[in-house]
Length: 630
Image (cartoon, rainbow, N blue to C red):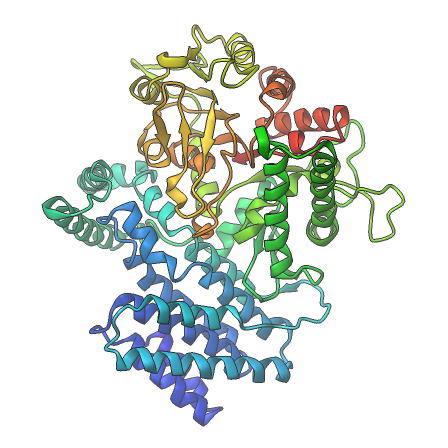
């Protein structure tokens, strides 16, 4: 079967001779098995950019390049290596798929943009020079050279004119590729959680082998070195061979396969799904998935650097408000920080949320008694830090656009990607678990809390939750040790954790919850649990939904870890929240979530609206809460 690279080369050769030679060079490098995988991936990225830029209709071939590149990129995240090693391998390619998506769209949105093509061609020429330099060095990994290559890729700029949303089969394929190329580490984790019921019924021996191998890999969790690491790599190879065998069975060709555009559209049956694509110095695009179509909406008033700057401004404002001791600003500084948050919410509404909701027809406020529509957001890059669910116009007499707010128009939910959303919905569809041969109906609840001298008001909030959920005990202080919490998580339908949380700016899986015992409940710890009947995790710890700045495409944080573990839904926070206000949120939330009148997402939504209406001048409190999952 002819490869994507060869197909593109043949078509390009018919149109532009010199550029065809450049493509031929890319093909040769990419297909050279003697070169390191990281180097070949670099060439695959360049090839995808070339294909999008060389000739009319190149988007189709850019997609083919991207597919082959992602297949090779997946090999860099081998299941047998440690989480840290996999993260290190992906560092040089962070955001590459997003860049390919944005640049490929220039072909679809601006088919006649010769100036853009010429400028991008110059950039590619620089890339080719850097690649030749690397080839002369024997293809050995060089952090500086790798950084220069990705810097040039990131500097490719596009000047979009104002256009309507684009709908085409290529956009369908691009969104599917975009989802597969992001969250590679999450996808690896999801393999062991896939539903095996159909396989078990048709081929029980293959299902048993799959469970045995994935269980062995999960138990080892990528041993760092030595014999254990070698054994992990061998087990991973055996799993690859097994997956190939399963795919060869009739009816199982799509086992662990990519989600198709048709499947993506079907997932929008409960509400539109919006992917916000951020690519350094390239246009920002919203991919909007509905049951009818997948469209690409150019966010013409949003520059990539603006999103990055807004995320940093928001972080500084939050840090100022929650600073303690000598670092705490004067009253004027605190007021300025609040105003900064309000400005960012206003910017997010007019530049991001308003055009998206206008496109999908949800821009008008929901009237009393009317049904609330839902929207799922999949942010990428610095978009992860923006509180889209709380975006609002700050001026009633606004002349910039329509006065409104996300909270008045839609119920928002967040997921790292389509694969995670599909996993969460599959878990939700299972319903209560089975214990001792009988279907479980009691909401087994785990409540963990810091003592009040650490987090004022935390115990009161925890006891309220315990009463609401019918929990017998609240784990406070030293009683909430790691072993006890991990054991309880395996058997709990409802979980509420009110503790300090920490996120690592450099490592996606480096986030953790600091338990009252002083021990860390880490993201890998959470990912390893296998709850049988999990329903919801309420994480009022600080910043449980905050993504790492590096490798933001992986979107691995405490909240997403609970989704991966098997909790269909979670409530998290984008930043630190005032512990004294948590009970107010929980009262509004549980009042709706437990009386059967609202879904979890609706309960979060209305609890936040109540907070906003009560303390509208304190957006640092009410704008932090998010709903994640199904």
